[in-house]
Image (cartoon, rainbow, N blue to C red):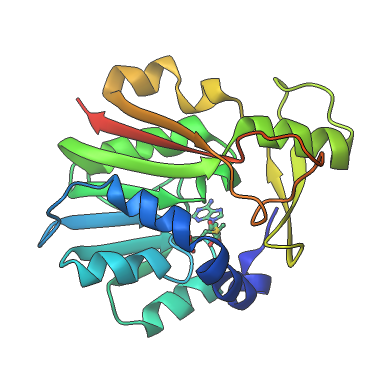
Amino acid sequence: MGDYNNFAEIYRKKTFELEAKSRKHFYSLLPFNLKNSKILDIGCGSGQDAVYYNRIGAKVFGIDISEKEIEMAENLKVGIFSVGDMNKLPFNDSCFDQVTSFYALQASQNVERTIIEMIRVVKKGGFILIQTKHPFRTIIEGWKNNNKLNYYTSSNVTSRILKNSVILDEPSHTIMDYLSKEILNQAELILLEEHSDFPASEEIIKGLIYPTYMILKFRKK
Ligand SMILES: C[S@@+](CC[C@H](N)C(=O)[O-])C[C@H]1O[C@@H](n2cnc3c(N)ncnc32)[C@H](O)[C@@H]1O
């Protein structure tokens, strides 16, 4: 598993530069006016997105499994942050206007469960906006780095990100995990986008252009 306690500082420093463009696009997919709305950010890390949500007037909550990341987020004084697991959110049903997650769901041991949890805590009609590692990238990295030969079976895959400054072992997921019947029973899929973010993600096969991350936007039914 990737232990973000060990590379929280380097992650914040490198992503500031390498993910600036994709974060800007991610924010553009949120509802226009978020003043006074309650936003929960899952896998919030050191609070980079919380800074933006706070700036546009939202009341921000963040949760992350890493104590170090939460300590860094708390120092920013832009919201309420807690250490916790994305698969068991310590919040009541339907208490947030929006729920977001930027590049964290790939770390979940059970993506379907995480999304069901995100749906549980958002209000009816509220949005769930997710940026996460694309499963095509996972199979390509797994094949090269871990001799992974089966897309459908779950196993840990090694990723070298942010110009090799961070090395992670994270579970593999399929697109079906993110769009299961249970998820689609509870929320409507509004948007699915696929993008590439080389060199933030390693170019495994030189010249092969493939999606490295995807964006999913759901609305709770
Ligand atoms: C790639 S970082 C992204 C952090 C932040 N969203 C950002 O963009 O700066 C992934 C984050 O997910 C967190 N994470 C991993 N597994 C988690 C879990 N089970 N529950 C909550 N957070 C988790 C990590 O600690 C890490 O901070």
